[in-house]
Amino acid sequence: MRLKRKSKLATKLGLFFLTSILLLEGILFLVLYFGFLNERIMAETDALLARGNSHRDVLEKHFDRETMEHVALMESEAETQVIITDERNSVLVHSNTVTSMIRTTLSSSSPLPVSGDIVEGDWGNKPYVMTGSPIVVNDQLVGNVYMILDTKSIREVRDHLTTQFLIISGLSLFLTVITIIYLSRMITRPLIEMKVATQQMSTGDHNVSLKVDRNDELGELAKGIQSLSDDLLRLKNDRSDFLANIAHELRTPLTYLNGYADIAQREELSSTERNTYLSIIKEESENLTSLVRDLFDMAKMDQQGFVINRDEVELCSLIHQVREKVSPAFENKGIDLIVSCQNKIHLDIDSTRFSQVILNLLDNALHYSESGKTVLIEAHSFQSDVIVRVIDEGEGIPEKDLPFIFERLYRVDKSRSRKYGGSGLGLAIAKEIIEKHGGSIKAESQKGKGTTITIVLLGVE
Ligand SMILES: Nc1ncnc2c1ncn2[C@@H]1O[C@H](COP(=O)(O)OP(=O)(O)OP(=O)(O)O)[C@@H](O)[C@H]1O
Ligand SMILES: [Mg+2]
Image (cartoon, rainbow, N blue to C red):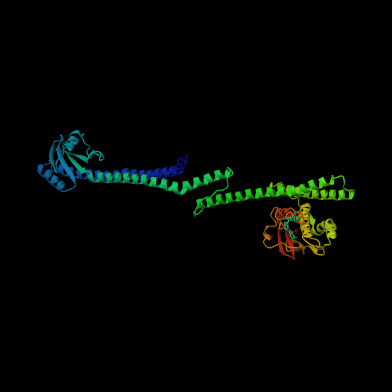
């Protein structure tokens, strides 16, 4: 099956190659054969007839033995041959031996026109061509002059051409076989390998390994397929990791909920104790709700079902609104929240989504800073850009983690006993939203000193 398929493309290409060469060569052969050879034979025959006519003219003036022999003598030294006959075509004089074939041609020759004629022109089958010119003296046919030309040299050229044609055909056939082998090695085999690889990928097996060392289009194709397969493998692993993480994220609060609900049900609890457990349950369920909401957002983003409803917004008032919302939490933890904002910055953005981003950033700043520290939200425009920064003096992010913090479910502190129960989705969502707006977001941080998150958006002129 594999071999059969392997030879298909190579054979097709090979046969195409063979047909093209044979066609080209055939046309060339026919052109040479019919054009060149026929033309040459026609020119020779015309010359032969002219020479015969000129002998005839002499003989019409002196139709005697001496002149005839003189003519024959002249021709005996030439390539041509002359035969002079009487009016009934009995040979009178000839320059060379008259073969039986010539005699047959002579005896079957019909009366000739005055200007002479070609008696034998079939040079392909007969070894000669022959012309005849009638000798007329006093309106009376007294004999004929026949001129004969051996066509051996022309037939040799023809035979030579035919041999060459056959040699080239054989050579083409040989080259075709070589081409088919070459093509199947060089083109078809890698193609088959790639086909098998893509089939393997489509069945879900992404452990594909293709030869990518070629420096041509096939090499590039193999590289493309290989990187596609690597990407798919990575995505598959990412997805499994993601699902495992989500399962873990959901299980942890659920375990708490279960545990605290069990405790809250105990009859010997005082109402104050019960209330404490119930408020823990409420807090955990709120965390769960926000996690599910974030996951839902991410799913929508993946399905391209996440739409940005742009509207012109004045940035400072938007930031102040967000600040109002979060200030109780900051006050509770004893962290100063300062807004520094250049007035009248207009943006064409989805205000709800953008507030969500700022809320996520402030949430991080709050959770990763100790009391007594300050968090600053700063916004200004620079040329056509609008720059928003959230700067904190918190614990900072280690350099090795910094490139990954915008990835989904990535947390610096991976231990489950961490003080803040974030799930690692906040920054991933913020990045998606900002990029959907055509902007960019980046983080700079120094462990122990603090973190600055910078958002750059295009302002409204
Ligand atoms: N301001 C910051 N200071 C220190 N570390 C930060 C800060 N912002 C983010 N990080 C680190 O980056 C990680 C990813 O942040 P992200 O906001 O995506 O997730 P999270 O805060 O853990 O959870 P979520 O926001 O989904 O509730 C955090 O776990 C934290 O380790
Ligand atoms: Mg967060």
